[in-house]
Length: 164
Image 1: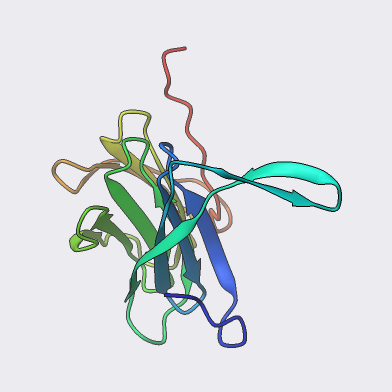
Image 2: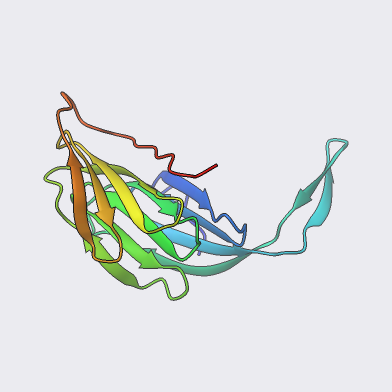
């Protein structure tokens, strides 16, 4: 479950909000998953002490077809879903308990570069080279709204929908 650094560059690294899961994904759409131990071990290096979690490999899988380029990977705030985005024009949703594919969001017409979950993990915003961003209802996998009018590719997206 360890990425080969000579094979493909790591494109995304994500730690779940509960700190229990670490995901790394390379540019060729391979996803690597580890669990982080809950009991930190203290390590001393160069005179500095710090807390280091132990990682245990969980799984490795291909998130998008061979020959496509993975652009991002994010874990939802409720830690139940991983989203991966790709040059195949899709965002794919993965169940973080089984690592099975649960949904493919496929309405963009060019590369999907980024995605961000709403605070309650019910919605997802994706950005694309098709000059748009889309807001998805994750319960129905349907687009709620399309944001258009951009002159160039939309390569990143952020969302602040918290009530605080």
